[in-house]
Amino acid sequence: MYARQRTWIDAITPSTKTQSGWENTFRLDEADVIDIRFDLAGYGWKPSTLAVEMKSLEKGSYKIYYRQVGSPTWIFHARVEADRSQAGSATIYKRVGVSTGLLPQAHYEIKIEADKGSKFTAWGGAIEGIASGGQFWSNLQVRALAYKMAGMDQAITITEYAGATIV
Image (cartoon, rainbow, N blue to C red; front, side, top):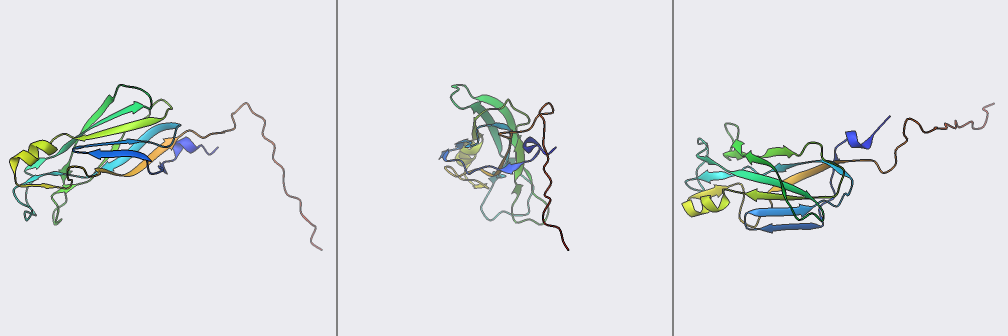
């Protein structure tokens, strides 16, 4: 039987989202979420905006938190570090994917902190990939429970179409 929770779907663009300094927060509009995934912009420090094709000097990282809507406490999920882009790329740092794994069915909020952003700003040079007040995440997808699914103990009736007879 087809079950919606086995399929990733593009999430509705969150109606409640904020980008403040080195922190992004958003509330999912879907209420029956059991798993969340998204991409984070790769970022890091380099000595100048013109620097390309060089070894990663200092990788950026994010701290990811989630909570059920209405809860006052954020739950730490993971610290995610940016990674080196492929050779030949004009950018040094590449995007990284994040998934929460299975969560209890609920309505969630996510908080993402670019925890090295202010440190890199103080160093001078350039931050590649993100900027203070920008949106760090993209490609938001969720898995959610179906609103109505037939259970194994429920009777199912199949009616076949028996249209007109062809002569």
